[in-house]
Image (spheres, rainbow, N blue to C red):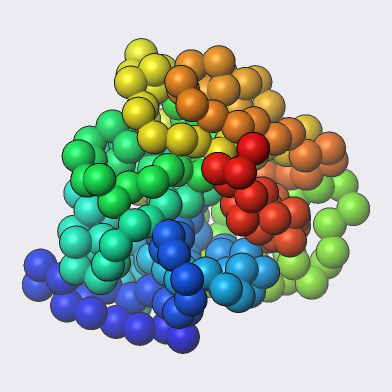
Length: 253
């Protein structure tokens, strides 16, 4: 169910499905919105779960936020407003940077861990992606998809579903997201994360290749790493059932 709230004078939209805890609070990647998590949330029917729209997309009021630190502040205010009790932050791509930032900033005893999907401690963005969004903002045409976004034999229905959902994110906002990702760097601080981390990567991901996940696993003190053979950057959609199983087993190893 998609809901909306007024938080700090801004209308915030999010998908929320009730269930048991700890709650999952999910943050999407660049140029995306809560629909990136639809398949994953559907694969976790027994959990209390939220998928948030960052500002300036899919019903959440703008302006868009230009840094990961600002996005973390937005996330923290959402959690304070809407989430009761223990929770995990699930972050895909840029959202993984927000999850890392939250783990470093939060002092809440209710934060029980983070789930890092196709992300890294630093998220450098290829200049061609930044340029394509700058050009798209001028022409009004959606930029082409970056290589490695999907696995080789991806279901065409997933690609079509994602393309339709991305129309809810303005091109200019997508460009702001990618620039925020490009400016994110917590390589020197990942060692200070004090909560458990579940790290999941795909071997076919050209945007955040497995070496990003391996660095996180070598640096975060308490972590569990899974590299999915053949998965692309959008493993949150392509491999939703497998990611859901890993989340459900988090902490039982």
